[in-house]
Structure formats: structure tokens, C-alpha cells
Length: 422
Image (cartoon, rainbow, N blue to C red; front, top):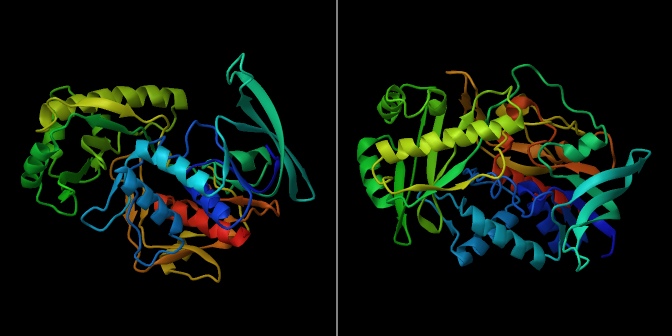
């Protein structure tokens, strides 16, 4: 392994894989350092599907389109009736990403961590990576320390973990600037046709409940939260709480989607874990118990779920907001809501400001009147000249980040940065 690179990306999540693929395609020698055994981050590890729909005028979409085409060939993607191409199968996405990254000539170190960073005069000189290797006698059980030199380094960890090791400045945190996490899951063995027929008759609000047929299979979506009284599913949740099937906290957020390429499976954007004081370990345990109760709710109260079962629980929590690293430009809610334009935008979007809350009636969904842009300078570290940040830890204030954290925007960030680095 040649330990000299043009670009090293720490974190092969949504923004990281897009950046790496584009860097490879543009001729840059590129390495991904990934702590998990797969790429894709929130899509694959946290089961965040489908990708939310964004502006028709979005830019830096080459990677999104390449991933979609690869998944279409694998039977793992559809275009929904609203034109959204982001309905991905999370397991097949792992395979598609491996294929795309290899085709782009990008190297990957799985199950690897940065243990040390050498820097001088606002420039990163090298890093030390703890990885595994196979010595035949102890297959992949031996640790190997690699010393790697690169022209550019990119923090794609989502939490700013690489930047934290460098003591980069974190944008100020305020007491209320947090959002609850989720632990998603999938149920299989669902009679989706039966469920769809009942659901479409039960809920006539097409802003909430939709269904369509793609390739001869039925796909659908619906939702309920405790933040509003308008939901058609509300009586079912009230009855389930009264019956002791679920807790009131279980009912705080409920959203489901069909899974592309798996006709009998439904993915859930829940439970939303509303106690922000829990440790991550406790959040996993609490989330899995809530999943058990919600699965029983589905089998008891929703037609088509009688023979369904939990087939997958996310490997990692769905995190909506984390450390945000100060960049050369701090993008603000005022910039976003005013539609401020920039000389070097990396993305264009119209996705609303989506702030989840652990309190009833406190969540916000603020739609924008016009499209907005994110400048390249928000991806440039303010502390190190050859360090960049992509994904949900970018240089943006709390409300702006609540709009920018979606998968298509992360894809565009990674692609826009790659084009700059090339």
C-alpha cells in the first residue's frame, strides 16, 4: 500500500463516499478511512431511507445519479410517484457503493481509526491509522499502524471527530440547540397490497399518505406524530396507548416507507428517542424496546401486518445534529431563508428547515420561499489550511444545519468539494 495520497477522507458516509468517488473520477489518489465494515453511513448503518426530495435545480448530482443507476441495475432503487429517485434499498446500497468506489479507483480501509495527527503552522502533515491485517495465522486479528501523508484531509465523520482531535473550534452550542435521535427498523412479511388498500381509504390526506405501483409492486408512505391533531392514524395510537400496547412516548413520531426491491418490507423512521440525557448505550436499549412495542402495534392495529416480523434494526443511531465545526464562512438561517447567493455554491436546495423536538408542539418545519445555496467556504476549516468538513458537521448555525443535513445535500457537498480539490 502506497501511503501517499492527494485526498484522505475520514468517514465513508453519505458526504464522504460522494467526495471520494468524485475525487477518484477526477484523477486524485484518494483514500477513505471508515470505522465500520461498510460504506454509506446513515443510509446503510442507520437505515435512513428514502433520501428526501430536493430542488429540481439542485447541482453536483453526478454521484447521486451514478448511485441510482447502479442500484437500478441491482434491483435496489425506484423512482416514487412524486419523482423522488432516492428510494434506496440499504443493504444493496452497501454493495453498490463498494462497486462505485472500486470503479473510481478509490482505496478503502474498513474498521480503521485515526489515532494520531501531526500538524504544523496550520497544516496537517500526516496521520496515523489503526487498522487490521491478515498474517494468515491470526486472520485479521492483528493491529497495524499506518502512517499516511496527504495533500488534503476531509472530515466526513458527521460528528466532526477528526476535527475534534485537532481541537478545531466548535460553533457555540445553545441550550435548546439539539434534536432527538432515532433508531430505525424494518419489518418484513408485510402484505403491502392489503395494507395499501386499507391505508389509502382510511387516510385521504395525500400530503401525508401516498401509494403507487412501480414495476408491478406497491410502494407507500404514511406518518403520524404527537405534534398535531390532524393525523388520520391518531385514533389508532390513542387506542393502543389505552390498551397498554405502546407508551405515549412511543407515539411521539411514526413514519414508514416501503423498501425498494423488497416488496414485502416496510422501513420505519422511528422510534424517535426523546430523552436527550440518555447515554448512547441506554438510547440503543430504549430504542430497541420501543421497536418491539411498535412492531406489536403494527401487527395488532394495521391490516397487512398480521404475519410481519422485525427483519432489521439499524446498526447505528440516526443523529440529526452534532458538533458543527467553524469554517471560513458560518452559514446562517438568515442566509438560507433569504436565499442568499454565493460565488462558489456547492449545493442548491429548497428542503425546509426541519427541527425535531422532544417536547409536544415544539417541532418546526419551516418551508423556504425560494431556493438557497451553501458556499464552498462553509466546507473549509477555519483552523487548518488543508482540512475540509462535509456532512452534518459543516460550518452552519443550528437552524441552517436542520435544512442542510439531508442525504442529497450531503452528496452535493462531497461532490462540490471534490471538484474544488481537483
